[in-house]
Image 1 (cartoon, rainbow, N blue to C red):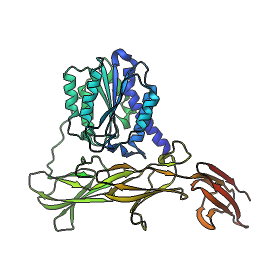
Image 2: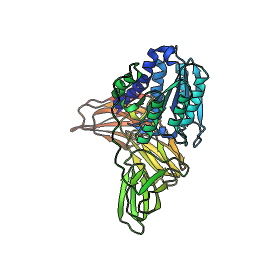
Image 3: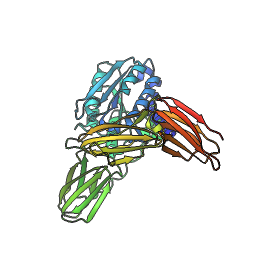
Image 4: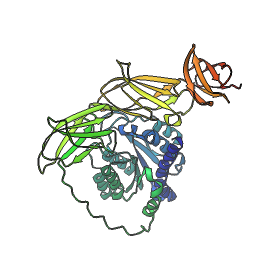
Length: 471
């Protein structure tokens, strides 16, 4: 998993560098000043290939900043990182000028996704700051979703282009699964003469980038595809975490829809994913959705020839968690082996509410007070209380206070670890490495014949203890 994630991050970094490289080659006279707009909205706590999107973005931006030409001026803007639900949360983190790459990367590392996605207003603000420099300008927008503040980014970009503002917008869609979001982001690039790249497919889009940046323009465009056949639908379902949250988007098997006739337990239709659009016969229905541990429902009256839309509010929040281990610099969940996560209600620790074995888990929980625990290698554990409010997008990070035990017992039948006279673990492997809570233990090595061998050892926080037992 670790090597796969590094490959993914390298592809994301490549997407960023490919967008800049043809401009850098022409230096200041062609590319001019650049303003990067970074999405730091709440959805950036989403998980892609075992890692939060904001973590991937931080790594990619750091790589770009380190390679940025000293002769090119750069500014950085971010939205959605300071206040939840505020469409005005757009901050110029660094004005256009010569950058201190290390200092700017450190600032990006501290961005804490919380809020909305005001793409249109961000483009307007960035264009205004670029215009003030009176130089040819470039906007580099990184977004993981669609505008959520009522603006029309495509129309704004087109209006700015037609007004004579000399700028080009290059756009990276990060983990875009919603076709409407992708079309919106592509339009921003198209109307300003820029390029659009999908962060997940940077290598496959390199040729298209070169063609777009080429003065010759490349091959003629293919004729537009025929318009898809229009299918009549009568029921649309939108899903929200809270009444004032934007509708969720994207495909997820964790979200399941159920349509039943009123007064009946018989399910007549259903589906998976954040949105729901189906043809349902006229009648009275109850539409319900299950997402994680949250459930919502709403009545729907379907009439012939009409599209009925129902909004289902879960009054829930989404929680992700990343674990780190004390004493291991830069440690993160995806670097490790077996992790197990459990969520308990704060007032009831008798049984877990939900669980996960994912490196970076996502939980959808109704409003309330909870406790999250993580166990690594069955021998190191951490926990943290937290509160969920409707609409929250939270990262409940945990730090394991632990040391590392490296052991080897060649020729043994089984090895055990005891503490205070009690067995705390039985290990099938004869050598390995385990994270353990600090303390005093006894390593017990048994063989097919003869008496077991016992060796005491101590685990200290952030340190590695090595022990080899031979018969």
